[in-house]
Length: 300
Image (cartoon, rainbow, N blue to C red; front, side):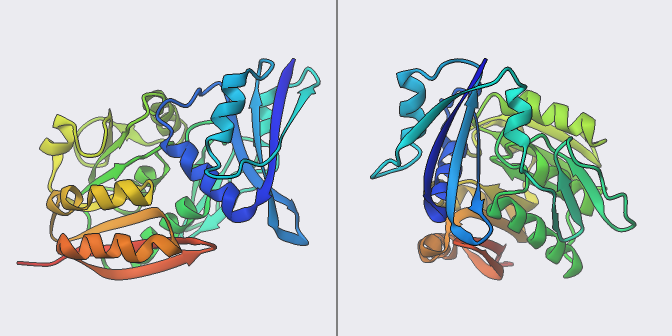
């Protein structure tokens, strides 16, 4: 048997909970979560659903409650019929089109259209399936950067989750060297599995991706592989501010930093930190309550 916990809350709280889940380094990955609208005619009414293959324990309920700072919504617990709960968690996760990308779960078909890159990313895995506004916004911004003539020979994706943004970068700049990192150890095998499913080569050298587990930029391979033409970080506002000097020093003069995971209300603080670190705003997208920022390091 499998079980589900549901919390009903406004859209902004559920979206913030999804981002908090990404940053929860001690998250039990036997618990799969997803957020969605309850009804099309009520776009601000959302639900957070969590599936697991055991009766929820107090620790499980507390872990979900911690995703909601302040007042926690009521948690509704139900036992499900003998079904594949991983598949259940993926139901309702519709494919998205952003820029030149189409991202879908295994339950949906690839578009196979000229000029469109299909990525299959199971929704039950680490954060970054493309459905969240921050990830989708990054895909749109990467496509925009390519159209603007940005050239990338070396890229890093910090807080990669499923590896999707690193894959997207390699599609747009196929001769680039790429490295992806995440603080969560579960992301290592997830990225490798997703790379195999999407035909992304693993290893060093042009057109290949290296995966490491690291906090921020604290890994010998991240240091050795730099400096970067493009650094992507879809994490949270707090770490983005803290890591501003490290990110700035990790990119070449004129290089690009793509930031996401920050609410629009947090944007002034994040932009100020990067301005102090020597980066200027080159582009901006707002998706719902979330800001996606393209910054460039000043040339000497």
